[in-house]
Amino acid sequence: IPTDAFIYHIKNRAHRSGLAISGTGIRNEFADPDPFKRANEVSFVKKWIEVAAKLGAPVIRIFSGKTLPAGYSREIVEDWIVTCIKSCVAHGQKYGVIVALQNHNDFVKTADQAISILQKVNSDWFGLVLDTGSFVTEEPYGEIEKTTSWAVNWQIKEKLNYQGTISDMDLDKLCHIIHASNYRGYLPIETLSPGDPFILVPPFLQKVKAALAKAGHYR
Picture 1 (cartoon, one colour):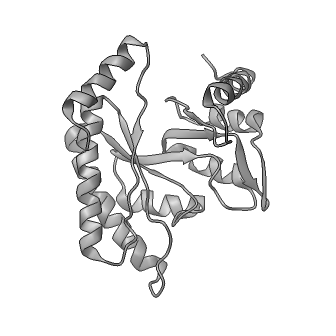
Picture 2 (cartoon, rainbow, N blue to C red):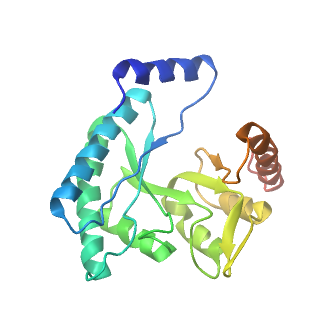
């Protein structure tokens, strides 16, 4: 966990640079069969919720679990995950930070799997970081559309898995889905291609802005 001095340094520098902090994120594992390890992961997330509050981040991204452990049913493991998340969400509410699950092609691969956890936690302080590139289905755009009402933040990516093939994101189609939704927050982008981000990010950002403008959403 970073020191308060470091957290406030970043917060100060962001403000002086005219940058809003839309969220932060951590890696965690709630699908471990060992209850003591899960408890440690919950403690870790709670500490980072407090970091997010100090930073001024309205959302903290978490994961569910890396995969379904051998010898356990999905229902049992999902119960572990939901129990862990509920404890974290209560802490998030206390500190004014929304806890958000990212669909990350791990334990959560589909819209229905994400929605199942979202419905079971059932809190205004819990939502979805909608990762546009990580629904593993035959029709990822339909999965994205199905989950927009749960989104409290996004990850707009360059690529997605479309019918078993890694394809370029259809930004026009994606932005029409976003425009038709009730989402009004930030739309962070994420480039995963190797190379210099100072070269890769600006052209992708311009493509996203153009698609948003075409959809009548960008402002």
